[in-house]
Amino acid sequence: MSERACRHLRIHGVVQGVGFRWSLHAEAVRLGLGGWVRNRRDGTVEAVVAGPAAAVETLVAWAHRGPPAARVTRVESAPDEGEFGGFEQRPTA
Image (cartoon, rainbow, N blue to C red; front, side):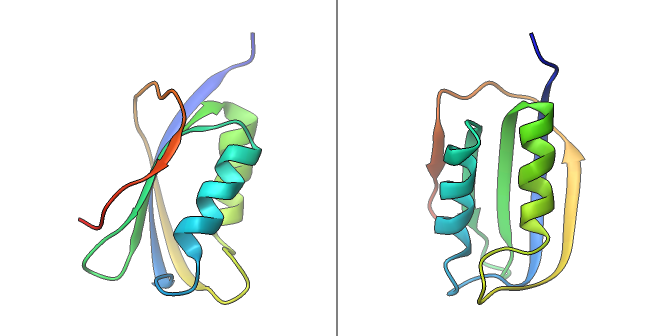
């Protein structure tokens, strides 16, 4: 069994109104990850991603770029915990 990881992400920059949540969701599903993503009222995007460590790291690397219209300036990444049955988009918090 492969090593599992869970990361809490906060993505800063031009990341709302550019399809970031939808694209991160699609990338997470493609990688077989569980967790969630949502916009924050402060203009950031927040996500928790869990699954095989290599896939989590692939998604974290993707979050530094995002979709083509995004302009990511910073990604905060911290260890987290959780088991998720799938990946969902949550309402703005």
